Length: 415
View: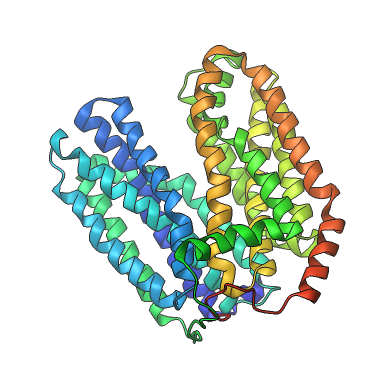
């Protein structure tokens, strides 16, 4: 990662993202606790997370905007706007104001999609292809490390000074992120209009590009199938803890800490894995780690369960760095916003659904049978991804030779 650390723009960007993650993750926990305190209702507290996830479905519309304008000014404006609208939560006083919480969290989720797609699309503008895996790995390491401490930050600040303190912290991190983006020495060329078409056609371009490139299509299918069972994990772990280990539900916090530790350990080497094995093999290895980790949850032994959760955590950064780098390297800059947003919504939707049906399945089906099904899905996804990588690469090379550098229907020049 030495080359990344020598890149001034990359350092500013990554430091800003780490601060922003701290504010957002702290707020995420505090708002749920806050709604629970106000209402006493688990269901209404859960709606906070539903509102956020519903907002992320706006991603493809943001992807269209990201590819039509300069990305850095857009991200600066989005951070400044977020610093303002998040303060609307300060107006919440009692249960009658809860509608405002859900509206703000919907917008929060929507802008989260904008940030994810916009930042992914901006990174190739100040990083070389060789630096992208390490930069993505560094971001994931920071993200996973902060997940270990931000719940304590959010809960501690909420307990000591109330929700207002966490809201103010998040506002400050948005402002710092905007300042860091402003300080970056980066010149983006203006977007280039190639043809006029409807916004629906422009939004659909990202989806068409994903399914039109064999390597990206294979990655999309593998990740989407894996995400269709990934959301079961949280509900399943409570069954593992109670039925398998006969422990208190508070042991869930221990497992989450161990999973985070696995991610922190694997993050620094995820970039090296991508550079050595390639994006597809690295992601396939991550899916394989999910399968083996799930198998270790079956025995009613604490050591095995801890090892399984550690292995699942270890695989997570490899999967994210693998598919993110593949998108950045294989997608023209003028399509990257729309393509990433399309990939995001097509993989997040199965995960959202799996959270819902996973909770129902765990209530009626032995968790060991569910784990066997998950192992099969993860293993099949890993095999499917790895088995066809050479053929997919050859198909994409043929398309690249045939197509022009600018895909028809694009609306921006490489940034």
